Length: 306
Ligand SMILES: [Zn+2]
Ligand SMILES: [Zn+2]
Image (cartoon, rainbow, N blue to C red; front, top):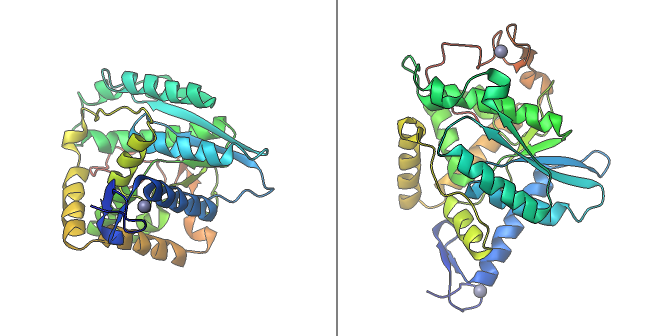
């Protein structure tokens, strides 16, 4: 297998580009797609500001932090920070918090940990013992999103970067399509303006596939935690993961098309008023309904949000 650009040995085959790339040309491609997304998604008002990376310690967020740090930290007025949400899942999260901390230390990046137990007084290990028909992800997702926002606010950040890749985003689009939830599709990251109390979420990996992210981490020798959440087996997302990869295999470029579709739908809701949020009447945190999704008991779906 030879590189489509220079003819040397290829390290990866990328069907949606109809290209095979050697190490040099793959790294080139990966970083230029990432940088283009950063330029499109992150716009500091006065040329400076802070970006927090929601760092789980897994491959996607570790690669996101690694590249953001290398391209933004050289700018004098820009700060890159990181935090990890501790859901309280023993044997899983404790390990990845350590991996996340090590990456931050090696890059010289400020790192904090925020936990379900300190904010909500509970852990996922105890939540899964009383799910009442819900999946663990349906319970966990809203709590994690609130803490991601809280941690980014505490770090004084203008943006929070999530490590969602092309596969993750395509799955979310399809999940929301299957529920007919166009409003939720329009509210997916990246966000160009911040709405009352919510830090803008950006996703610079959205046009890079999971396989490309793994290959990049390997070639750059970025240490990440390989384990999966023990509760993931029950996730509705699993089905969508399978369907999206089957579609992509048969019709390369479908995942990118789903991302374009999301972008197009979000672009049609240009009036910020369309996106405005109120506050939850129970806990006072930002919410699109009277109750935020953490306080609302009724949600029975896995969440197609990001
Ligand atoms: Zn090449
Ligand atoms: Zn609430």
